[in-house]
Image 1 (cartoon, rainbow, N blue to C red):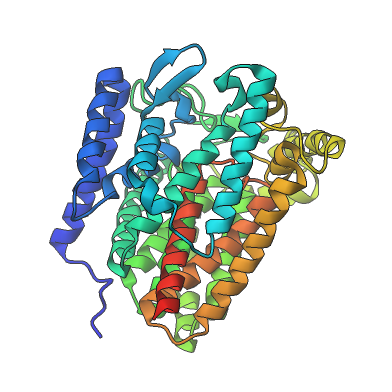
Image 2 (cartoon, one colour):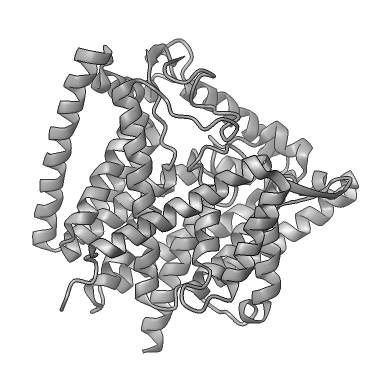
Length: 472
């Protein structure tokens, strides 16, 4: 059977241009304000009636906006239309509302392995927002930030309706891989040149760099803190890249996987180290014998590249990459005392203890939504405890049980006789869910982070393959 993961030159060029066009359109919003917002929204409306690649451009828009590709930092930085006190709509709000209206008749009839959890969270979120409105009297206070759960839930159904066949899944994965190559290449260039590229007015705030860019002093070391602009993308493409490489023998996706791993190692994030290790371990276990050899080969290539990077860092930048990596890992066991005077791990421990007190004060129902609760307790560096303090056990246990059940379901289907393309996709989804599990517990809330766009994409992708297989 012909390897349909191979791409010709024209297809690659078209994909690069499509990604660049999407990024430029989103960037233009920050310079054209309301006029740009209306223009992009019109492009979205036209795309709804595009029979060839329906929903593809809006999906890419949302990815670029929501997953920190351009370091927006917050969806609130997007241009918006103010309709009165406490009521405003930005581009993402308009897209989602239109999707709900346009697709409602299709959405209400969709039954998938994940739909019960999606509907449960939808109803739970609506309930908490209503309670928040009764308390705070304004829509904005009642639904601050967490009301965006409705956006994530809507896009699960958009993804599910988009993934009508395997080719659309591969098409979107290829577009994401282009973003990974572009974004990580820029990141590596910044590393080698000791310089940070910025777009004036587009990146008004960054928590990862100093105001002037270049070096910052963090965790006791002066270094270039290269947190990737495509964080969740390169995490996801590590899994898809390695799965496609080991199962479908795609050297292109080996490149994607290696570039992704290098990007995270430069970011010096302990939780991502653990996640990537789990991803590689899962793929190693699920791969055929020749696939295991390919993972070992890829690991050797990665080690060689990192050693070259290490030599460059010490000779020209005076920065010991390996020492920083081991320091970050050891700081977790010493609560921050090993790696600098005030490590982020120490701060997380303090925040965790504060949130734990909030959860214990109302363990079943939590403390609810609303800006007062959100501003006091929520932090993107805490995972399940965020969910527990906001929605209690009724909002958290179903998600944990669902993830465990979904993992077991994927394992069951992977062991069935399915073609290599679908198997590679399901293996990648399984690896990501297991690799991401430490982040649910510690760093990233399952529903409360922008990363959820990728999570719902994975669920919709897996559900579409599983459902189609069961129908056959």
